[in-house]
Length: 554
Image (tube, rainbow, N blue to C red):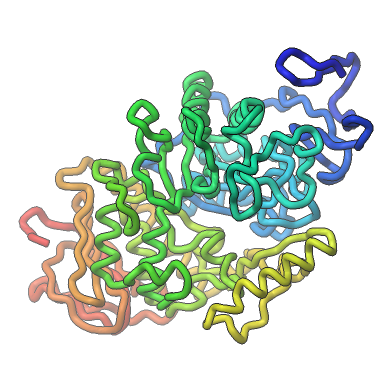
């Protein structure tokens, strides 16, 4: 290979066909896989394979994407979404997701990782889809089929670190990382130190490949607070700008969303206004308030949240709870809200889902709030039928690293009172992985089929709300007392009781649904509605959705 003026080593070879294997020797060491490999069919430690991204025949011509204000996200892990754990198997569920009311599928990270199972955040080959899920063309086919059904597809990507095993970038250059920034995973990725430009190009090119070669509609950037950059132009701003240019060139909507724990309004402002240019943010404060209110969690970061219904209302009205950054003027749909996601389930010791801890009437009421708010909702796979399976933390590292992960996981939860006597599942055990796979047979059985009916009905209402011309402010919400909330949007209202039984005295219009309707629960306890007396009597937590009459004052 010959060194070019820009510092790269290059070699052009004739007659190399798709499917050919190749690797590199660096100063006599190796062989090493390509750090920009498109495919690692034998694993991240083995030879790379040539892929021609233009061989796939796309059928999504005419696809122009989905506006973020119309998004209903469904986060899924390919390996545990189906029994087979492949792209092809996941594609067989696309029609189900369409029927549910989902508009955007968000795949957990796909960058190839060591072993046969992983959440994806230990990725080391960022350009190569994880080989255990299928081939690059299998992934293209998944996205293609989604687009033909009118579903957008986002990808969760990790640019704050590389995984601990198989990251061969260091074998090619010592400048992929910098000691000037430290993250929870070690030295930061080099976005601002000496010889950082090729690293910046590497990351931006990775983002663009997902748009151009796989037709993804957007990215969710993991833990942007840990992407450190003191250069004049932050790598995040450069990346969102590159995505905007790709959107214009490709003629379809492309969105980049941040997971940003610092609640920085600047992330949602354009670069011209000193911002980072993100289309939206994961706004976890709503989840934290609801978790504290409903399940009583107070360990760790939950201690920062009150969990009162007044604090829930303040969080919803503002967008987030913590931080001094003022999000005034930012449209609600740019905040992504959830009751569950991979972090908030899988980073619990036992991987228990919120509905595993709550009575189902409470869960139905909380679901009604989430799906009727103007913020963009995100569901985690299986929550729509209250899946019985947990979502646990699982890995498949080599023995030494695996032991360290297992021991670290157990130390992590030793200080949590709620897990002090729990037996923490071993992340390295294949049984931990298998236990996390969804059981699709549950859909047809009570009580899960009733919960699924509720999600479908609420998502239909949400779709109607999104396209209803607003004749009043997009959101009015108040805490009636320490048990109940009243929500109003565009002629639709919901009285949501999250605690106990009792009576609400409020004017209300024509009822549309209640969470005690027999199609939504196997043990219905009807809410007593008296429009003349303006009363609702709840025998347990629940919600009533009704049309609001113009003369009624909420």
